[in-house]
Image: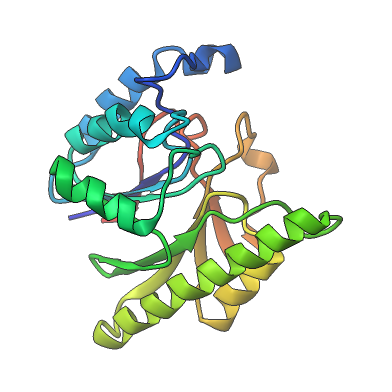
Length: 229
């Protein structure tokens, strides 16, 4: 019963968005993902998918991509990325899950989940605060509010599971307003996506004292990363 993480699947079963325009590594990336996932992940495992799930512009365009994810082994906890324009309210997401029978999928959205002895919280995040325009500042504040809500739910789970560790998943690289929330609540580890073509040696290992790990799909060669055995 292990826990894995991966971000930026960029699926497009119902959208004309070939990913190989972003480089040869993305050729047949859906098949690479399927094969690697089935090799690594068991039905009893959990995979956190940290945003940029589907290129679908509307929810109906993302249904095939969600069905693909549901067909893969394990429980999946999905959060929102900047390209997930199909993402709707928590109520609509729950209704989809109930109507479709996609019981292997949960949505990380102002809430938290217990997976083994990890408590999973997070939000999408947004751009760096320094030099942000007024519109971005409003989004940054909203995302900080969403993380606070998620952490609040995580702390409730922590009361019931005192030995569990609260860990954080942000689609964007975590910025100061988010790392402050993590530090205030004793969260020490964070996984993020969004960046493509990154060079491992140039990536920070810590941001504002928080241990951070990039898990975009191309960075991981389309193989979910094991974070808890």
